[in-house]
Amino acid sequence: MAMLLCRTGLGRRPSVLVQVAIQRTYASKQSEKRKAKAFVDWRRVQAEGGKGGDGCSAFIREFARPFGGPGGGDGGNGGNIVIEAYKRVKSLAKVKSIYKAENGSPGGNNGCHGKNASHTVIPVPVGTCIKGNGDVVLDLEKDGDAVVVAHGGLGGKGNQFFLSNEDKSPTLATPGEPGETCVLDLELRTIAHAGLVGFPNAGKSTLLRAISRAQPTVAAYPFTTLKPHVGIIQYEDFEQVAVADIPGLIRGAHLNKGLGHSFLRHIERCRFLLFVVDLSITEPWTQLDDLKYELEIYQSGLSSRPHAVVANKMDLPGASEKLKLLQKHVDMPVMPISAKEGWDVGRVISHIRELYDKDMAQAANQQGDKQNQSQKKTVILEW
Image (cartoon, rainbow, N blue to C red; front, side, top):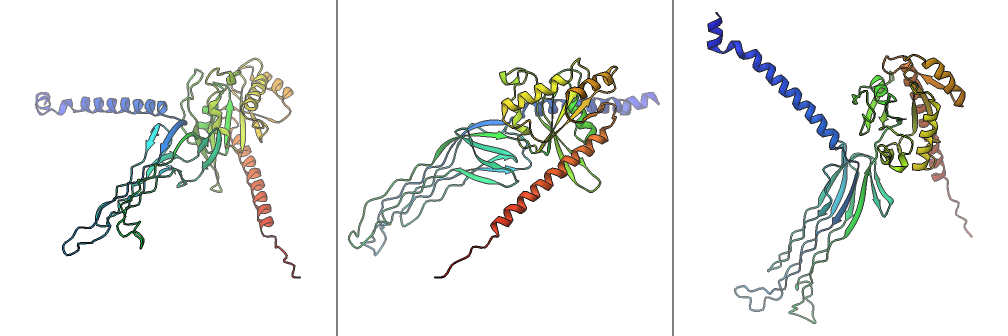
């Protein structure tokens, strides 16, 4: 029986399957590393619209038409540069530095007009901000939002366009106009309701894994998270709240220490924040002061948004004494949890829902006030 298995090749089949499985696992790990390295949240783009096609100067030459007159057609319009938001695009990695739209086709004889050039579309993720000269020009917040950043030039006119009673045989034809040129900065800002802010190794990624189905990388070394991760919390009433995990922030990040603070653009859209404090250090309240200071240096008023303090790593020895010291130095309630062990994680989920409901109620009141102001009737006095 053993010889029969060797001859037919059945005895070697399990080893082949194991080898294929190992290759697939290695390929999946390699693809995850490539995705992490390929995340880009800032690009500078030079966009140039297409040139319009030149007009044609020609005369009709046909049988039995000795005086056919002018027959030069107009040139086609140049293509536009369009930036459009797609929900399936997750990064600005595939955005090029220079975009040049197609030129319009020139006009032809016998009144043939040139073809208009097709537009060039730049796909970007939802949440991309377009900046010009440092100011936000447009914010693409929804799927399908699009804007023309560089218009193409108009096509030139052929000599048929200049036909008049005063000039029966014009020879004038105008060239096409050049397209617009601009330099823009594209910034990707993650769209989420809540943002997790903390020092490296504070347990932000572990907390996100505990409250949602997101799977960020978790390891025992600092700066594990190199790009933002977004997790969705599902509630019983089918409400969904998005929570963003921001890379670790350290003291002196505004001086480009650690990873810097350029990635804080991803929490500019967050309506409220969760400060994750590490109870494994000697003075945990200093982390909270440093985090608020770095947020204020980046953008004034960012640390004053609605927020909560989460004290993580309660499973470590001595964490209870450090929690008492933290509560003495903080003038707001502190939620002690252990994201690794899952202790009191439900309290964090409930508090996130409370902050979310307050924010939604406030937004509804503001929208109602705007509608009331717009519906005010104007009185017309008749004299």
